Amino acid sequence: MIGTQDRLTETLSRVARDGAMRAGRGLSGLVGQEITIHIPDVRIGTRDDACSAVGGDESIVLGAYLGMSGGISGHVMLLFPERRALDCVDLMCGQAPGTTTEADELAESAIGELGNIVGSAFVNALADSANLPLHPSPPTIVHDMAIALVQTVYAEILSQGSDVVMIDTVFEDGSGNTAGLLILAPDPQCLSVLQEAAA
Amino acid sequence: MTAVATEVRRVSVGIGQLAVTKDPAEVLVAYGLGSCVGISAFDPATKVAGLVHILLPSSDGKQPTATEPARFADTGIDALVRRVTEAGALKSRLIVKLAGGASVLGAANAEKFKIGERNAEAVRERLRHHGLRIAKEDLGGTRGRTLELHQATGRTYVRTASATPIEL
Image (cartoon, rainbow over all chains, first blue to last red; front, side, top):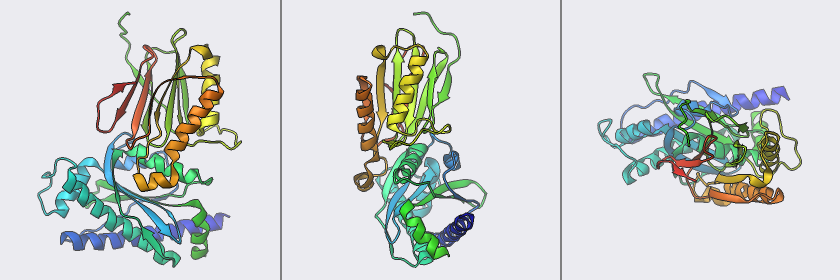
């Protein structure tokens, strides 16, 4: 069984790298400048410190949640510390960083679009890897305590009676500051599909 | 009421965890309850305070683990009742308050899983089973919550990401 788990880990890591590359390309096209998404750490499983990447359990994050359906169902969630999310909005809108000071309607719409691009990139990477049609749902804006969001995804997977396989992808910008956290969590009953694809 | 000069110590009660205290310096806190439910119990006579942070509705007969003794509503509440009574609380005096059970991931997701709602229902059911009345509750909605119980006063407070704490 160890071999199977290792292969799954390897497949998911490949998916994460591929997804990050696609997401970077999508974002570069959107903002008209080169954006790369650096993935220092792909983690399988939920660790207690998942939220530390975005400032700790109680830190307020802004991001987007997408459901995934088709050959594999599951969750995709992109979270940024609130201030970093607003910086992303400025970048996307061609404004100086610091221009956007609150999560207003425009900011939420931009974050939704960001979630759409990045989330879809990872879903498409997974679809290609598993050779299955997958569809991301329209993004839902989330603006809440980090742990409340991560915990809810965790609960939904555990409620299906299995261990959690989550890919926590930590985004860093050029200066090495953590900018965000992407969680890709397939529903447990779909893991066998992924394992077959990985074999 | 004498002023308490001791420094307050916040004890984090994480997912699936349970804490009981008789120490006036301690505040038990369940941070960021999303679909999870926090259940506080306080006996005003003996000042025994307990807080539990459950993740899922039903253990389906599974035994609680040492690392997550209170993952499920049923076995988690059983453990809470057992621990506070062992510490000297009287079941009939317990003031029980609830917070959490929200749908933080939006309407479409909530419709599919209903974990928050199912958690809240399972908690109510288990409290009924123990003959415990719910004094106050702040359940459902779309916002994550932090629930804290102050042993010194028995007061509980709830706060969300966007609001200042309110007494429950």
